[in-house]
Length: 249
Image (cartoon, rainbow, N blue to C red; front, side, top):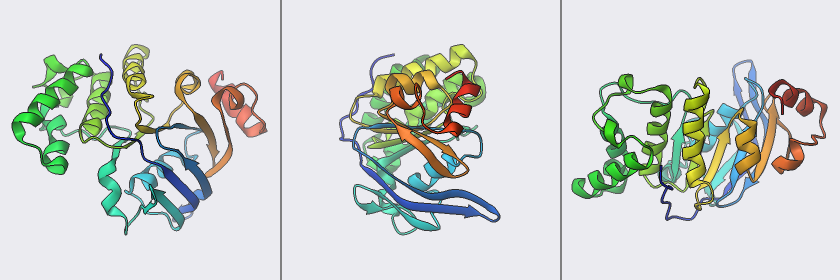
C-alpha cells in the first residue's frame, strides 16, 4: 500500500468544558483539551468511558449539552454544520452500504461534496483503492469483503472527500491480528501527512508508535493525558495504571 496523499493542512480542534448526558448516563463530564493541526491524538479507556461519544460530538453527529467544540475556531454542533466537510469519520462498526460496490463507496463523497467531474473522480477513486490494496475488489460489495478490507474501504472512503480532520473509532475492533495489522499499516501511511488524526483505540502499540498525545478516559472524564512514552510507561493515576495492566501496557 502506498502512502496516502494529503494536500490540505490539518485542522485545529478546541474542546472547552464539554458535557453530554444520555438520560441517566453522564457520557461526558467537563472535557477540555486542544488538538493542534496535524497532531495524532489518541484516546484510550474502558468501554463506556466516553471515547465514542466524544468523537461523535467532534464530528457533529451529536451535540454537547454544555461547553463548546470548535474546529479552526468554527463552532461544531447544531449551529456549526458548515464545518462538517472538513471532517472524515470512520465509526465502529464502519457504515458501509450493502447495495454499493467498493468503487461506489469511494465515489460518493467527492461527487457530492467536491463537485468534481465524474471522470476525474473515478480516476482518483481507483488510485485510492489501489493505495489500500482493494483495486481488484472495485466491484465487490461489503458482504464479499473481509473485516479488514471493509475497514480499509471505510477509511479510504473518508479520505476521498479530502478532509482535514479524521476521526476513527476503534478501527481494529473485531478484527483478527492479520486484519488489524493491515488496517494499522494503512493508518501509518497518512500519519505525518499533515492530516489531524483523532483515534479511539485499545491498540497500545499503535499509540506508542504514532500518537503525539494520548488521553485516558473513564466515566466520561479525561483522567490523565500526556506523551505516550510518559503516560504508558509511568502513568500518574492509579486508574490509568489499572487499565493499562489489563492490556499489558
